[in-house]
Length: 607
Image (cartoon, rainbow, N blue to C red):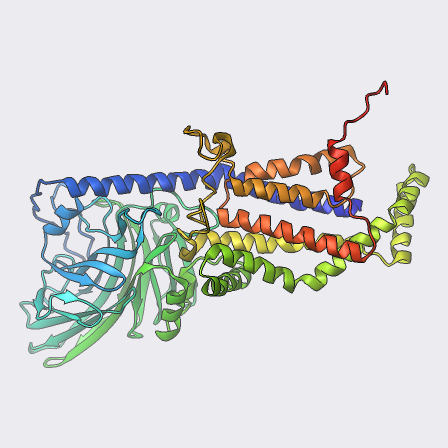
């Protein structure tokens, strides 16, 4: 039993360390994210009230060196200033409207740039009337963020499409899944560029460029694409999640570069590739480029400080030759939207995009986090509620490990039966630890007991706990997913607190006092589970076992509500399971005696 207790304490302390990290690092980040969302919501509301129009001004972009991707535009004014209003920035250029079941926005005809995109199905907060998520924004804003496809030419090609090219709309001026949009541009060297934008019902754009050479000589040019961002998330990412530049290309495979890393190293340039993708990812959203022509291209992840500082993931293809009187077509895809698991997986499979599912940060333990998500998602499709899905998943996991748990609890029951013999051995060899251990091992062998068997039910919970934590934190499916009652977001902590009587007293509380209903339930079930076993004879262990549920109640209060609900439900199932097995084995269940002893008045020394 001592080995079991020591192991249990080790596991508990490990989870305690995670809890402290969650409380002092993750929770402040979560609070900052909510504050950033509130500020963003207020900013959007103020923009809608603005009545003054802005003077668009001119834009100046340095001429690129031959063979290099042109610099990103700075702002409407040559002094680098930015506009305060999104509406003002959108009104400063001609645009083609985007309207799909999932997206709304526009394409900027200057540069044929995708720089105005909102997600129809996602809002800043759980309030259904809060503003839609603004994924892409014009470069004129401090939050500028866009995707752009263009060309790099030479003196023989003349001016080729780039950030300052003003395109002309041919025919239809609204991009929908059923109606592509075609743009055109003709330069002074007889080259005509026709660009067709098409989009599906979700988040994938296809950009097809046809170059027609009506001149008298062959021309050579390269195709480029880039995702450029002028700001970064208001709240820095944490260790369990990657936010920043990302891609899968060449022999290097998955590349992840956090904002701080590219700020320090300026550029990461992997080897050339003929397939893959690259872009910028946030916790729930991403914008990526997918070259689809199998033309060799050079990927790059970079941070630029000239003009306005910016982060950029880009590619540049090898030169393409278009003979006189001939034409050539190049095609790229742009993913811009929510990282929904089913849709990301479908793009990876249907469009043969290598490892596109890694756009979602499943982590090193993808072999358990992905199956955990699929199990929860399957249960959600059956129950229609992610909270119920988590409860059902817990039952499935319990059932899967029942044979091992049955043996473990049976071994624990047998350990209790021989506890008097173990006490005799400790007393007999109290001064000789070596003989004490030898006698214990002989007892285990005679009684056919594995002293570590009782550790397995606890140990098995740890990978499941971490997998569920990861799934709750990274998957957008869990974002703003309600349970019942006051739990309107399973990915956020329980918003109630016992210290204001669960909202009856209208006072604001510090984060450390936000101890909600579900953390209390979790703490109670943990207390009852620990009282199923005899109280440790060692005073230090006894004190740890007594106070551990209290400490965990405070620490787990900052975890996502879905995780706390899982832990509480798992504890309850473990209590029932352990009680049934111990009764079958004829072992005494210590719960009632421990509860009575805990609250019984202890006699004074005089008595």
